Length: 270
Image (cartoon, rainbow, N blue to C red):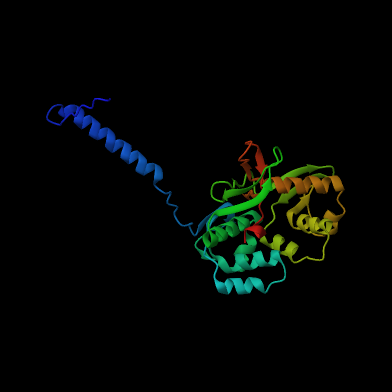
């Protein structure tokens, strides 16, 4: 048999006050533990990892986007392929570049990586930042599972590093290069009948500015570069491109903790 002693506030007011404070603290901790996380709606403003340099106003480093509508969906449905669909989304749902209305000329002048950043922002403001991928199998334990990806937290963004025009040392000598812009991207998307090697030539034609100080004008110059030089240039361009690193996403396996690669594409997000 258990003896129970009742203590009143009059008998030990200090103890009763201590017990009351403890009970209130435990209640507050319980409420805090079950309080749902409140996520703010995605911002329409986008930070551009490369930015557009204007000789008069300096670096333009932001853009503004809006949510896609049914009218946009109808326009996208009419285009021929996924590349052109993404161009249509970009053209229709980008509101501003810096403080200026987003014209086609401004969009074409942006780095390809900045355009990808804008498309990612359009996706988030339209559908949210949560994405489910899978079922995908862990390469270590084989468990198939669905992964939850937060585009805000899990996608790393590479900022522009170094000069906007840079030099690559090749067998042929010093090659001066710039990064691809929207103009280059559109030309490649519209070249649906080209092979991957021909697309590489289009990219290099737009990005290679000079070789050993001599301006490159004829596309035949980059076509006739040695294969090792072409690959070195393409590798350097790829490594320097700013923008969201959608191909580098990894999540831990729910069973063994091994990192599982979960590369995303902009096409897949829409």
